[in-house]
Length: 619
Image 1 (tube, one colour):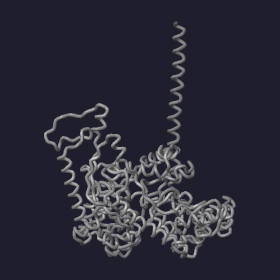
Image 2 (cartoon, one colour):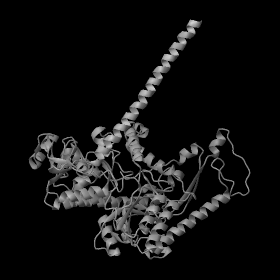
Image 3 (cartoon, rainbow, N blue to C red):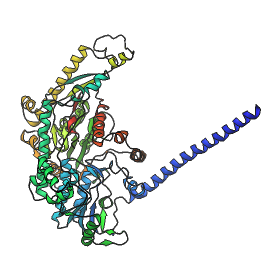
Image 4 (tube, helix red, strand yellow):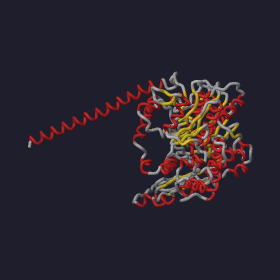
């Protein structure tokens, strides 16, 4: 028996030593990887904004991921990820819009840059105003006399929007130009909530306020469908007209209609590349080798690297995945409101009311800052957080600092709320705005708990206090919530009426939660001018009476370790894909994630929200 116990003890000790060895190996490996990341990132980051002085040839615009107004976090490790770890997270990568534009504009006057090549296969997308702003920079580059080529295996609608600015568009023999139209879809789960016995208590004002419809319906209401169809068609018309102008054709040449497209595609045996060539959507059907030969002839050949002469836009700039950083002692502050406006700290996809109001306060108290540009690209969110931003902006205006709002892809609901103090509002013709209305939602689970034999009971001093997510809400509390929501809507209407010099009745007629496209918003007086960020800068300089402009980009600050941890987590997420992406089609996964991100962050202390759910995703 003793020998048996000795054998067991020996096996146990040996196993324990193996486990300790594995544990130490794993932790030491992680430590070495962290050291490698830190040392490598510092070295690369120091040279990030210093392109090779020997570059010559084309600016290779090989954008990867998405284009945003402001990246979620500064990314000093972006180049290291691309060069040392590969590009598994390229579809997740964010690129700063204004740095892309600045880089292209700098290249236009750089004698070492002799042209441009657009390689957009890994560009996931951007909102239409952002694409238009980049397109404007590309058009300016073209006016310098330098040739522009677009080369791709195929083109999505976003990719083709930028490609249309090129002098020549090349596409692979098996490629296609995917111009098929726009759509916006929302998941509805009233029946699911009923099956789960979840009680949704909804309070809202506005005929068109559709953000809560997923909780109370299984389909889109006629009113929401009517309003959405109007602005979506306007967005589609803007898209087609821009492409038709760039390609020197008419709208029918870009998209002849669904039936005609299918008929023409059938006539060429389903060959989408030949169809695109016949429609003059592309200029040549080339293999990669054929396209490279053309570019080699135009820009020369790099024998060492074995490709035509070019420098990637990332190497040329080194700033695209960082928040824009102009002269710190600028005279116009640029403050970005991007994503859902929420209470609490800043996070990817979230505009923190606390952080942004602090940035506005800093700009108000800075004697060097003579004007403020609020760049808004948000579907709205918490009323409390939106009001925090709005009131601080109003204080800056009262302090004598002109305020100009530059609207990006969307400035709807709470995104419009924060814009109301502005001296001047500029929107793109394709900006999605309006959605003036608010709602409240409280989900309770008393019925779900009852079904499994769990109950809530207790004592309260009043019926208003006797509420719980496990017990439900009283009729008196429900009435109080509805009155509060109606008051919030009245406040919203009055804020807009005062800022737009109209009566509350006039604003109510165009409010009710209805969404408007920028061009229509200009007609009904919700914005002052159709334009882009350049126009906002010019207007701010005019109002502040400035002879020269230096932009001071207010931005969230992260510690080096914060940045390191975020980069590691991003790469881990890229290696281990989102389970939604694994098991669901991308469009469905995007819809679920979009709605979940908002509903999981519904943290307004008064449960009041000014949010436009249908504004957020257009396919």
